[in-house]
Amino acid sequence: MPLIRRLPKRGFSNARFATYYIPVNLRDLEAKFEDGAQVNEAALRAAGLANGRADGIKILGDGKLTKKLHVEASAFSASARQAIEALGGTAEAKPHIPRGVRKQREAEARKAAAKAAAKAAAQVAAPAPAEAGTPASPGA
Image 1 (cartoon, rainbow, N blue to C red):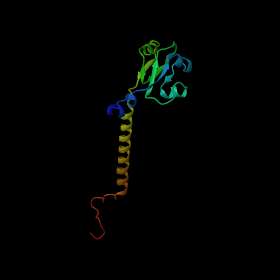
Image 2 (image 1 turned 30 degrees about the horizontal axis):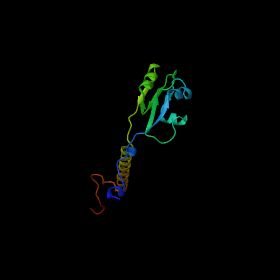
Image 3 (image 1 turned 90 degrees about the horizontal axis):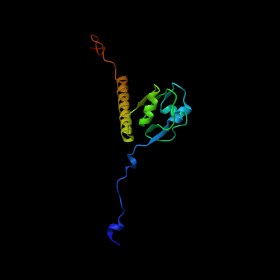
């Protein structure tokens, strides 16, 4: 058998870098939320419309919406955005932060917090400077 057929095949997979959204339809928002409600990721998860791990939530335009809602999600389809805004609601898209960047920012924030805590501890441990005009030691 030729060597090229015996060697393992390796390649690139985009699975680690792909963006995964949880889809939520307008008919689900109509059924679960009251008129004038604030709809965000926490509210969608509490209502049972967004379960599992994902990078964000995408609102899709399937169904009919008759309530004015203030929706905050990662992405919107064009028909969903149009339907929400036609009733006087707002469709606010918060930017998606990739997982790798998010983890890097969290690590940087932890390092900065640890550095600030160490600096605060060093200031507490250091003796207070002597006041001007008073001798540093009793014999001086």
